[in-house]
Image 1: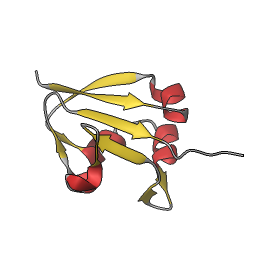
Image 2: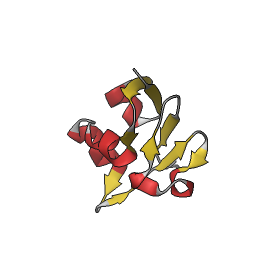
Image 3: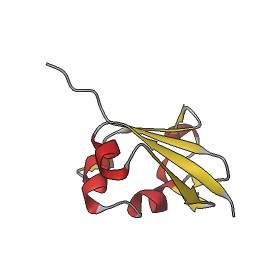
Image 4: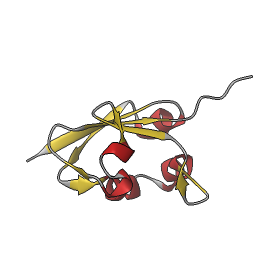
Length: 85
């Protein structure tokens, strides 16, 4: 079975854990849709992706955004925006 990994930081880590494996091939959008609603609310704001998503340490936009097909051994990192104060 072909697998890839997703890594989570911040609030997503609290919901989904530090890391998870998932079966491939799968689109990035379908992977996100498999997450619990609480996690999806952190990823999307007003219908748009509100976090940085890296595929193999490169921005998802370089691969085609949410329609990107994730393949065996890919690593997807979900990084929330940094807040400060």
